[in-house]
Length: 501
Image (cartoon, rainbow, N blue to C red; front, top):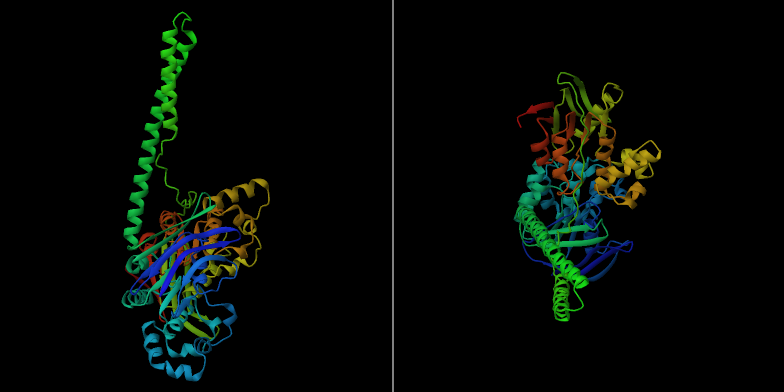
């Protein structure tokens, strides 16, 4: 039994969710969508009773139901544990699960040597795989997955899609991956913050993701048209009535005292008009839909000559410590190429991107922007959001920064607050805004869409597609690769190979 009834979630006196009710049955795959900071992860944590910062009312009925929870990232307190000790409680636990363990390892492209590694040595994608492995070995009844596709290689993404579709277990999952949502979800829960993030709203539909988005757009367009039409007609009626009332009032003021019958008729007419006015005031008009506003972001016109050499990289070996990940890497980037590097988890893509960043950082003939996979690598140097966004502290600079952050739908509290208090999705937004404000013409992006909602991602893909500078990126986001990239390389142990798009 998995039932949520009249659930409300309040954080810092603000409703994130109000009166949410639904039931999950066998084969239900509920995809949760919404902008960053709207309470999606908080909802999953409330279900497993692991959310001390939230006040909740209503009921969560999970009686006799074993819940498996994949958190967005493995807690740092586990960094020094080996993968074996993170997954298994004992040697006996390991031997009890050994058969299914090796089946899953094969399916998610991991070798058993990884069990000896410490969590802190794993790549981002490997950590996600280990999290998935752990909850699958626990034989849970219901699965809650928080961004399960983060950093996964494309092969494992396809396996995850098949798993979600084939299992009868109910699954609730949060994802920015529109491809995953469109291929797996059969229920959509859309969580919004409306009226400048002062009120919450949710929509739940038993339908697939593509149908939900299409029907939502049609409904919003229809309601907007209807609201504007009704308002226009209403204004016409008000204008016509006002003109008549003004004429009657004028006649009342000018009629001769010797015509009491005419005065009585005008008084009766005015009484009738005022009655019409009261009825008109009570007219219920269709409202323009109150939905969460989309982000607004665009790069100023930046240009790079088509023949300009951005990068000529010749790397005999790509290593982490003493481990050789790849060799004989050659990469040439010319002009405004949009490049994406793909490859299996642990192949060294992020390590390579860091090498490229270090190679280009001293250059003064380009304006370089870098968005790392782990935002805190850079953000840990700053305390507040505005400190990171702008080095200048003048009133004009702060006003400009706040205006741009407002376009990314950050609240005033988020703009002026500490970086440690904002979500990963909001951190991704401020990185992108920093690239815009710095007028960068060469972008190094490690999974640029990974923490952004499926509602923000189309906007980000569009501005990166239209970007006139060079992009060197790593991504497993299939829509990003399809729409924003024109050159693809795959990284293997033998080096970089260009592949057909």
